[in-house]
Image (cartoon, rainbow, N blue to C red; front, top):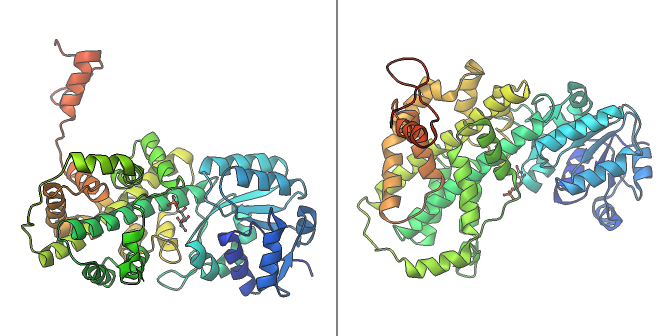
Length: 463
Ligand code: 6PG
């Protein structure tokens, strides 16, 4: 019996997704660049649901026509190689879905190249890590609608569920829309993780709270409005011990990155959309890796230890508020970027659907998405910043956010995301900014001209 679908790449994500697809009653062919992984996979999970192919030709031949193939290999060169390898064995009308964290411009290039050969290509963001891939990821497919329709049924069956029980999958839009949305998802993921790390740092460095107490504070956060997957797993990470020592104390403080946060920031800069919380998180990761320099400067520039003015109980309340407001701002910045990308790239994004698909399975799933989704359902193409809901939330949490940032500054604790998000908000609510001085300086040294507030036109100063 021919397989319904083929999966290329049996790394962590590929093997988990293959098992998920098979568990929904599909027959799945699997292939991997090194055949050992196929043998291992079949030995471990093999039954009549799987066919382990040795060569790309028998992999392709084992599939029902039109063939549906999901590619789950690292983005970049490995994806390019796998595509070249499989395409020569495919026929017109076959369809490939790339489920890796591909750069959206690569996805668009592949779509155009493969179209010439009659092969349809879907770029699909897949979020949720190994657990998500196995039990239900959040899926963000984009490309030609026909390509989506090929995979629609299977994707609907393997996806996680949103808050109302619907599958966390929807057609995101044209061209590279799927991978673009996933890229922005990851940008938000960077900011979310950074602000949680900053909260941990504040409690540890300023209040010097015992580790177990910090764990309990995070558990409390997870049970309130900050409830989210990342808050939840932060408790897991904090809780883990090796003997009596928290594992966290043994983990080197250098954060890695694969590039999606950087791409999000590059895009934001290119399109002129401020995403300071997200971009701050990317810089924070870069700075964390300068361990030797930091260690040297820590000795040379010591800071005076001050006793905190706010009690730890009050500070925890402020922190919860600041994190909540900052979370809203992380999502707002991602959505503002998506709005601009939608205009620039003509994706035809469906904004309420994006926020629905992010409600289950993905790394940034959070209770706050319920309210954000409702707002966008009412005004799909309007900025959340303009909603009365947002303005009310700002009033509720603004002072707490300010106190947290001020406390951090007076005790020498760096905040990349919490601070950047506060400034973002302060700037947005300032009808007058000091950009008049920037314009004056630009005109003074380079005759760049400026607009005036009292009459229309372009002017130069007689400096
Ligand atoms: C997801 C994650 C996943 C992966 C990131 C990690 O949605 O499941 O985002 O895609 O964990 O790529 O990225 P960094 O290595 O850059 O942190």
